[in-house]
Amino acid sequence: MNIFRLALALTFLALLSGCAAVVVGGAVATTSVVLDTRDVGTQIEDSGMRLRLSSLVNSNETLAEQRIRIVPFNGDVLLVGQVASESMKRQAEQLVRDSNEAMNVFNQLTVGEISSLADRSQDTWITTKVKTLLLRAPEYDTAGIKVVTENNEVYLLGLVDEPTAAHAVEVARNVRGVTRVVDVLFRETTN
Image (cartoon, rainbow, N blue to C red; front, side, top):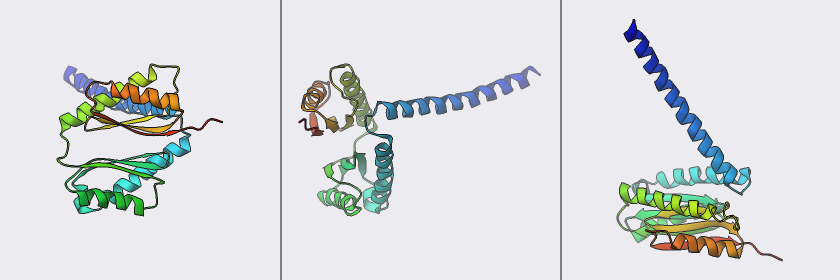
């Protein structure tokens, strides 16, 4: 009888841990939506665009084997990752442009070897560090900045005023491990 209770308790705990993962995942997603200054409709449209463009690129057998990250933000698309040749880089960009989904396409794909899992982990750490440091300065509204790191290069996307953009670039430049900061920030005009 005790073995039956132990098995039942372990099964119940396993089910609860699955629920906890769903709850934690939902909390993270909700926090991302709340901290993002874009309206929810824009966020949903960008997510849909990412799915559609990823499917389009991955339907190409040659490109599907490359590392191509599609990052939509406010209707613009950033392409980062690694491809085997310059022609593949152009082909990926052309597919995105021909879809008529993106207002602007920023092709930052590099020709070379696909990054390793260790490299990607380092990129995740850099992104987390940059985001954390940006949120530490309450005098700047950095919630609308998307930070993407690929191969130790930080890409900053969003719509901000000039002082906030300068602050974000400076913060990203000073994070250990960052080799380059690419400013894709649009500046708000003040009248």
